[in-house]
Length: 367
Image 1 (cartoon, rainbow, N blue to C red):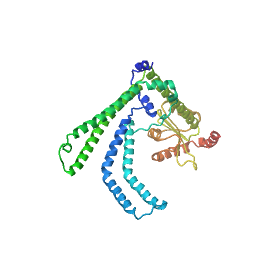
Image 2 (tube, one colour):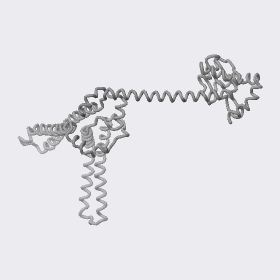
Image 3 (cartoon, rainbow, N blue to C red):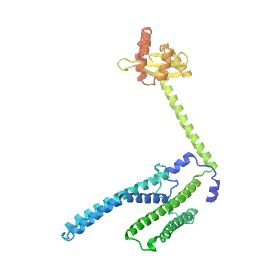
Image 4 (cartoon, rainbow, N blue to C red):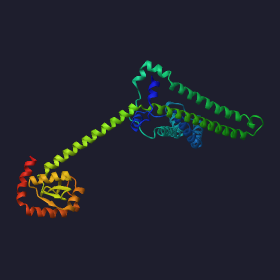
């Protein structure tokens, strides 16, 4: 059944499918890469700190053995050298532990693309299902994992065997050599074994990660129906968002039209733009934009203004700037203070009767 379902998955995963899978921790990951990074970090840090660490340990050992003959053994006297021993060992091991921890984090970051997964399921109830448990035991993934483990064992064993066979032909085993040569031999042998071991682990890690990448890619494949459903869902979300935007725009327009009858003046283009302004002394620090619109909505603002007797002034450049720069509910830009002040001054002189009634109209609108 699982093979049949897999055969039907012929489509490449969408970006949403990949992102959702990553959030759940479903991405290619290989423990062998983590082991390789940690081992290389261990060797690198050890190479830089071995000399200083061994020097510190040697100094501590010498001082401790020197004091043995003169230091009485008691609970109080034992605590001091014990704490010194722990401190010395901790100082020697701290760089190695920090390097291994950093390498482990780096290995995880390399495999995940340095992206955090927030919805990883560490425990699944399906793991308690005995039927699924038996199916997992005899699944292809288990056999593949066993094959990788055998490959790991074979690669490491082969690397060490080849290294040991090469060393058997060293003059150390067939002819008399100087005592100093023994140290050179041990140094050369150690480097040879470690180099071969790192190469073997690198090959195993590459094979393991390649298999995990292939397996994850197969699991992420989608059927045509899944692609269609996801596309339809995405379109539905877009339609919902568009409907919400339209509703918000209509509500905003309704509020603007309701505020037109309390405006001081309507500045028009005359046909393309219309902007309603109000200014109340002692309350507004500058004229405020009550409503603005273009084309059809501009005509609705003008018609409503004419219905309530709101003064209308035609000023093409000021109307364009007010529409482009002004925000509904906020004061006009400072660059337009002088131009709007001149318009309001003319309106106040020519429409005194309107402003006499405007105060009561605003009180009605507020209540």
